[in-house]
Image (cartoon, rainbow, N blue to C red; front, side, top):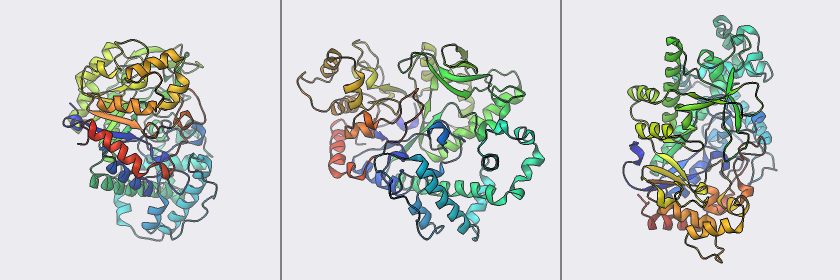
Length: 508
């Protein structure tokens, strides 16, 4: 059993950093995060689950699941207040007056944070900092990332496979010359990650002081136009000449889409016969897990089923219908990783088209799976997502996830008719004429279930509607913007959640 679910029943909240209150248009890992930790403690919560924290791109709607690096931290999450406290800036200037407390305008936030970090870097360049030297010399992935971002800047954000051949093929002499040719640019990206790392370690200390553990998120795939693929081309399915994917990731038609989802990420060469490639792929995953668990206490693996079998879509296909299942690395990968890293505190995202083979893999690895209540009410009393059908307490129960509508939005908009809504109320032991908040019903079902860990999206704690949804799968724009205004995280909300936590034996 995963270490973090061995003992008492506990609970927590799912809220990404970007959704937290702040003065700068986006939540961050500094003051906003510290304030939220206080709220979690007051509410009796032991876990805080977040989304991936890598650098995002406006091209991909600032999705945390399409990052330029699986290792680096997003500069948008750097806290200006802490930047000032660290002595890198004296004043916080050029803050737009139009920042909304309810949504994130990623374009404006990117411009604001960029100018602030550039100014901090100019001030830092005049200082001596032994910690910086230690960080840059000991962080293995950092120089590849700084090189990638330097070249992205020089070539005006073109994809790496469109760069000059010497950089596409990573000519050692050409790469070695980058820090000398573009010292200010190259060192800026080192500095950016140094600041993120220091602020993150401060956050970890704050969380530990309040006895709150962080749950991170590991997307199984990485973006094609990323430092990861550029620096490790041999471990991905890429054409030898164009360096474009042979096949891409996705899922077949499911609950979210009739044509499936074509994600477009390059696939790993799990089935390569080349020993060097297999060894390099294992090393890369080891480094990825090692860095993840340096940042968080546990991690959800997004699309865990891809380790058993994954949906491979021909690169030229416009949707995911024409894909096919391909065998993944299975239990052997995790056995080797456990030998190198020890026990892994992992939550397996086992949603979607789950076969007995996927279930057996999760059970063999002893990873807890996910139970999402919004998937429970299809009228089938044997539905495995209904709390009275949970066959083990070794699971994590959610009212919904970042990919679901909010519970209120789901109840009002996604359930097809009044008869289906009546069934939901019956399952919640509510009278049909009782119109109190459905989010409270699902929160109670979740917290009172046998699952060792109950995680609730912040929107469902607050009872917000579908306009506060975080992401709609298959919709390419308008996602990831929701923010929580500071007045919503008050004493009354914390006391209500704590009372529910005590009632259901999850206080810890």
